[in-house]
Image 1 (cartoon, rainbow, N blue to C red):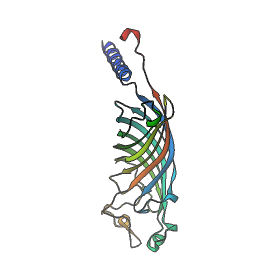
Image 2: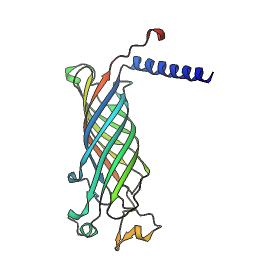
Image 3: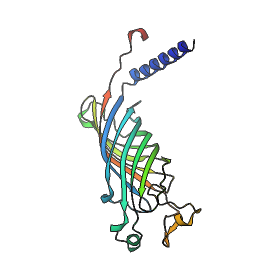
Image 4: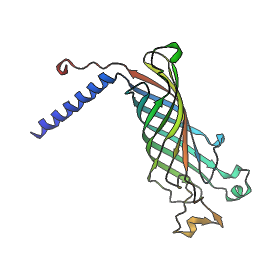
Length: 235
């Protein structure tokens, strides 16, 4: 009986997905490549010399020409090094780190134009997005041996451009920031419970009033499933 129930639930779920897909006719699968960057205690401003490779793949559902829901995964590397800073304080502290980010995210996108209208004049549209993410960040810092490996929550926000190459292919470019709720992405930890961590060699490790942030900028290509044919038995 339980097996029959499971089969019924799976069939119902499959039918529901196919029904939504056949009505929406706008499901995309895509991948992209780009660069990741970081701002925080070691690099307070965005610096091009800190960019490192990153890549992503994603699934996008377009319920209307204006709105889209996107779910994806991104892997990237971020780094910063104070040894070549123009600030004498940062040079003397000489903190540096390298981290690998493994992120999954979901977000909502708003398109300013209907770039999929099959019109030569409307193939390009700017868009904005906002969502949520969870990332595992593996940090290697020159200051502390015990590096954070917790899951960090972020708020992806950014802008981009979408261009319809052909009936089923789309090209995209975006730049997005991931504000986080942690100050430990760069390994510079200050929690007030350990003097050795909160200050090293008379140097304050962190800015207590800011949190770390990382970024992704990249180009993507996606394939649109324009129509899903329902099986005959479900018609």
